Length: 637
Image (cartoon, rainbow, N blue to C red; front, side, top):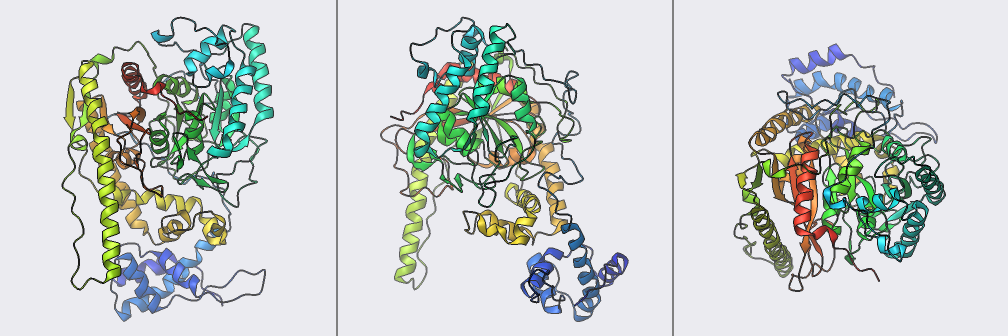
């Protein structure tokens, strides 16, 4: 069966005559036709059946348009069948995941452009010189046992290395040994890069001995989320079917950390294609409670840092993938302003939302890493030539500090589901079970609220005058469909080839199903959601005309909102739950980061205006010095 080639004019005229001025969701019709495709001999592409009036009715219902009259549908069918033919030549290009769309997203409001950095020129080496905070003005002493440095900060390790009190080779061997010792329980490592690491460590020691100290990351062992390409090693994206995938070049972030003298020891787990903490090798665990997952998707990065298996790691966030595991594992994560760090060589999930950032022990550590990796590379065109003026002695008391007041207020009364008339025994059981789960979740949230309120009290005791602010009331969840649509495009071949069945998770909320559902998302609605996003960027940016930093719990609407608007976030540990904490659910379904349990960490989040990441890190570092929660770590033995 052959179909007529696309006649765009005829299609538009037909739609116009039918009274249709918006896109009709051709993906819906394609999918419906695909379900009825004709069998073809082996090795040949299956032929799609023609779109019928009945399919058009179903598609219109799904798209929320129509209904159409019989005459309207008759006029539309030739054009729609022809439009469907236009998909195949594009699909035949077999575009790699690394090919972006022909548009570039920049999150800053028009009236507030990114601050320029004259030194940040594409292709030039980064300046890795950086001052430490006054806390590290003296040189620490080397411990009797090298493993006593497992939980040291980058600043402490850097001073020891610079002054040759320890060697990079000794640190690298220590961290490699810990990764091997604990990974059978943590499941955080996909690939050890041992040979590369030992060679880098030896080179770092030789350079430092020769007086060629490159800066605070020189000789520091680190790990990469395994969506970053590293030449000579697999880059699996955590997904079944990609276990042996490899790229012949290093990601820009890897290149920059190499240039800074850092030592890559491992590639860490991520939930398959950057969702959750389950990957083809199992589920990455929370070092504070091995019965729980580490959350994700930067699962291995947060777990390994928390367990003292690396000094820092690189994670990524599209919608919570640095924030969530940092919260669960009790580490510090810095999600930079969108467009501050190039993503060249990283798996694309959402071209307008993906961000790479550091996970480490402290805000200062995050700043030291961000200093090395930020700025244009001449390839990722979303990256702005913005500065990162890290200044540890910054007088943070001059900053205006706001807080999302409603997020700290008591939650409204919990309304439980009432029994329905003539409720069956099975319906009653399900209702009571659902109500019990909601009550348990509320009890955990109410318990954790005391830590949020204690943080506000601590800030006030530091001399901070807190200014109440609120996020704009916008349809944030509706806008988040942008992520799913872009992700479905990034992995279109996975869906169309049927290889999505190789992914570990196949539930209703997992990628295979999300990708299929996204094909029913109309182009017009995608554009409308992006227009709503413009309003969101303008309105959230307006908050930062009133304040410089916003304090908020790490959960809630802000997580979706600020990922959509591209604002930076710093997630910091905020204490440990006590022995009286409500017990966690028996099964960790991965849906909530604050599932609690005695002895597990809680977190706090600080937000800032676009490209104010340095102020964000400086204020977070001041809070950490006042509280010391970043020094807490789990006991693994």
